[in-house]
Amino acid sequence: MENILKIGIIGCGGIANQKHMPALASLSHLGKMVAFCDIVDERAIKAAAEFGDADAKVYSDYKELLKDESIDVVHVLTPNLYHAPITVDALEAGKHVMCEKPMAINSTEAKRMLDAAKKSGKKLTIGYQNRFNEESLVVHKACSSGDLGDIYMAKAHAVRRKAVPTWGVFTDKKLQGGGALIDIGTHALDLTLWCMDNYKPKSVTGSVYYKLKDNTEGNLFGPWDPATIDVEDSAFAFIKMENGASIFLECSWALNTTEVKEAKTSLFGVEGGAEMKAGPDGKTELVFNTAKYGKLVDFKPNTRASVAYFNGAEGSPGVLEAKQWLECIIHDTEPLVKAEQAYVVTQILEAVYRSAETGQTVELATNSDHNTLLYSK
Image 1: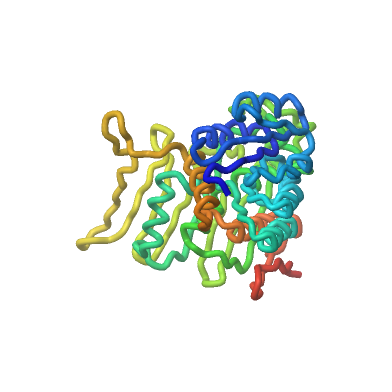
Image 2: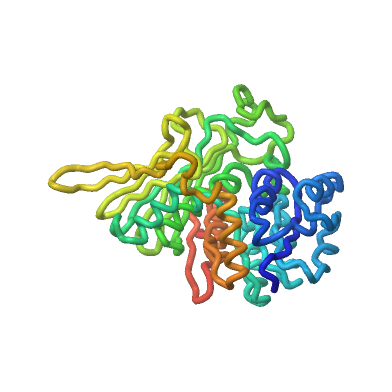
């Protein structure tokens, strides 16, 4: 394989233009985008013109793109419903796959992706770029170093005040599998499980709400059509882990609150705690707390230090995500976001929806291979 990877883009919509293609374009020394596919021809043509190399090809059928044996890597950036079938086909075609979050619309589809990756021997990762935020990396390092001790309680935060996405297919349950929970709740849950290094859920009790369907006033992205929205605006869950730890997940696109937290986690351990807060400038504020010298101590690590003309950073979380992903293919190492971890996230999300639907706690059992959903009676 050449050092410069050949990349195919499947899905040239919002997330492709906002994150993936600009990030990959800044990493041309690692990979180049040589093929673009979208069911809307104009989007693929535009993407190829802006981000492709001189000989970039354009497709409207992703299966035709996959026939190109020179392509090493595929980024799957479509509505959630199509994540699994396209990813499985790409892996079977011998491509490494970066699939945008969430992994799939349910755990059965996610398991298909996992099995296809193992069978093909190709790498599979999921787009949880919030792990690459500087505050996230600091918290994870503190947890991995044991600074917080045994983490027995956590909160996963994904709360907006009034920011329902009104473009694309975000409010289409058939194409997305859900609303706020599967869209932004998935980020907060992934971040929390990763920091805890705990992927063995035991039970999930969840509630899902469709309360603000007709209340469009003040929405950051403008009013939506109440007749076309069939997904939840809020979801909340209590998750118990096999080791006794508990996680509270709060998620909403539109909650009447002044405390907004998105893609953040709060961790509570025996030796100390760590909390991501919304700072006054809108940036994440990281606060550690413990007891020392006979006193309660809070401290905020300086994650924004810089020197004039040089801040030491390599780029945005999206760029860092893409860089780590391409380098792990080139050097045959593990991606930071492992598919097995994303599979557990998908299982928990599915359990929240099932618990809300049935009004019962969903029990999960662990076998020798993967967690299997077992629904309580």
